[in-house]
Amino acid sequence: MKQKEVFAQSEGNAWFSRNAAAQAARHLPQDDDVLVQILRLPQPAQGARLLEVGFGDGSRLDWLKGHTGYQCQGIEPSADAVAAASSKGLEVVQGTADRLPFDDGRFDALIFGFCLYLCDREDLFRIASEADRVLKNPGWLVIRDFYSAMPDKREYHHRPGVFSHKMDYRTLFSWHPCYTCYFHEVRHHASHAVTDDRGEWVATSVLRKNLA
Ligand SMILES: C[S@@+](CC[C@H](N)C(=O)[O-])C[C@H]1O[C@@H](n2cnc3c(N)ncnc32)[C@H](O)[C@@H]1O
Image (cartoon, rainbow, N blue to C red):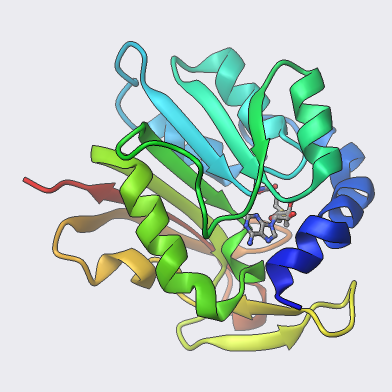
């Protein structure tokens, strides 16, 4: 079975029940480097739309909806996460990153927050292609994930047979001449401090799509 099916059937719900309370207790925006980076960007234009892929507990989307001009949408394999986010009035659908049920060029900004490390490696081209398809030109792409200069695969300790993958996720897009990395920060996963401990590296990257 592919990992995306494992997450759709059970592991997404398991992540949600393990983490929803802790996620909701965070102080936003300061505890979330994705939000910190988004707040550095120019104000969104009237009617600008944002998509979070693999939105988890939905607290980031909820904050963005309440504090920015973006119209926010999300997609997530966990039925429980989708139900919880819908009950808060968020516009969300159940699904996975390799198949985004949205029109071409719908979104001005797209977020992958700790999502790509769980995705099937054979889906990475499709995932990048789908993100590029739904992202407007020009558009913002924000990626926060486990970082390693060389790809690294490990057993996902919550579920045997599932793997997590570290790499430089910018490279899914940055080879393309129309994507430019504007910000890239590598920090310690837990403390958020600058660290030489490579095993703890997490990167937050902001890429600009501009097909000028
Ligand atoms: C570690 S959580 C991160 C949640 C949230 N984005 C955040 O930054 O806090 C990973 C999320 O990705 C979802 N996920 C796993 N595989 C996915 C896939 N193929 N496509 C989209 N989301 C996926 C999981 O269900 C889970 O909610």
